Length: 393
Ligand SMILES: [Zn+2]
Ligand SMILES: [Zn+2]
Ligand SMILES: [Zn+2]
Image (cartoon, rainbow, N blue to C red; front, side, top):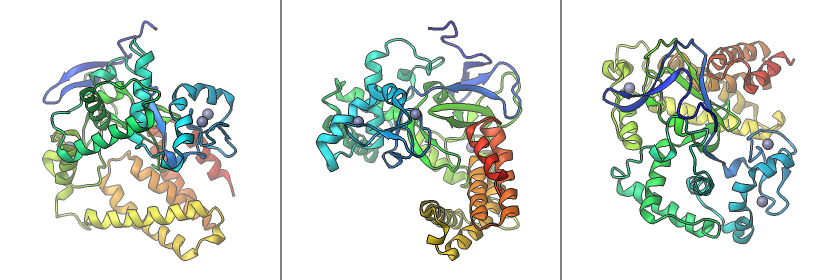
């Protein structure tokens, strides 16, 4: 183990007034600067992404090689396959044995991996420099009946599909672990915010919530990267948003209470600026939601069809119109550096390019790029790809 164990340069754990423990910076960080990156303690690829992404490193590419045994897991090469075996073996033979009936939840799959890792990982690992997995909050005593039933179903799935390979802890410890993962898990998303998998990053889980976040978490492979979205001075708390910031204050706080068991008292929540009716063009969140849902569906069809001719042009036009419409409220309701906004510009840009409307495409791409340079860092593979798309004619 390195001598950096128990600390991350430029950061420290502290008692945040009214919030319990938290993370703060001990030196200045500039807009777009990387505070730290953290490998996942455990992670799992979504079943629906199988075949599109490498199970081990989450690289998206064509022609991945599949596991000869189960024929369900796909890898870049033998190296990735070997690297993944300690985790994949939990599922490989079981998937063959159960066939179509193999259906553990993504949560149960992740917990199975955590249990397998805990068995061999006795020391503090590289994802636990300032917070141990076991120290993550569980709120197990706050869990309501509905959630408890969900956890019980997940535990049943864990026994059904994984008991061959795992020594199960007692029921109470399992409930705690599921609650911990529910409160502290991260969904790994790509540049268009499409869900690729789920992971736990104990160090990142130390970061408290604000509706005016000072940092954004993005993903590089299966690692989480935390970058400043505003200039920070020594002593400033590191704050991310746990929820979608599109919604008005009361909605946001309902969501926070429901999933994370607290009420936010950030400046945005105190001033309730998002519900002020004096706005010139107020749009109901529900209307925005419907637009987002429509655009997502159409964009999914568009992406799946590969060949533009297969898709009705009207749908693309509709998606473009919705994208354009959505971006107005998006720009007003989200903070200046938001992945929701960059991903929408990215989708819109790709639709324009698909319709041969290059200058509109480039202009949308530029807006996405400006946000992603801060959130993902200038050298991220998504930016390299995007610059390539912009150079294409
Ligand atoms: Zn790989
Ligand atoms: Zn396999
Ligand atoms: Zn707030």
